[in-house]
Length: 139
Image (cartoon, rainbow, N blue to C red; front, top):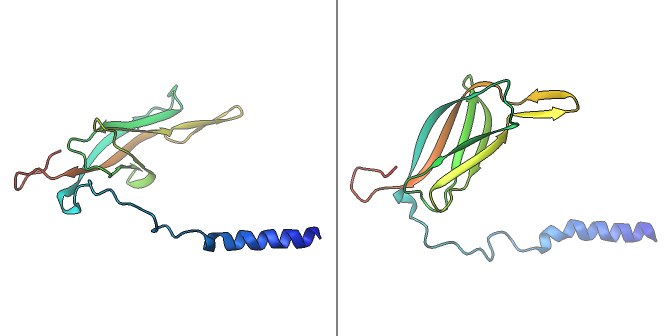
């Protein structure tokens, strides 16, 4: 009897995804967003140094986006010696600011593990609305 109930429950679990609505049904798109042709991607490159004797277990990338395109996140890519080591995205706040915290070290028992240590290059991609003046972009 337990086996039969388990089999019926398992069969129901397998059918459950097909019984739910597809992801496109019921979605309402925000019509106040800027048309895509009026959005450009701005790239900033900054250097970052994480000291080996850092007292904090985390690091942070922060900044502001002037004339941010609504609905677009800031994309953060961290490289060490030209090789990608970390990718993230974070939302832009209503004042145009953004911040993203990430772990630079961890502790397992008595052992300190340095996730980030040394020099890095950080690529920051921001979506901004084109300026209304032809040939210029607000940044």
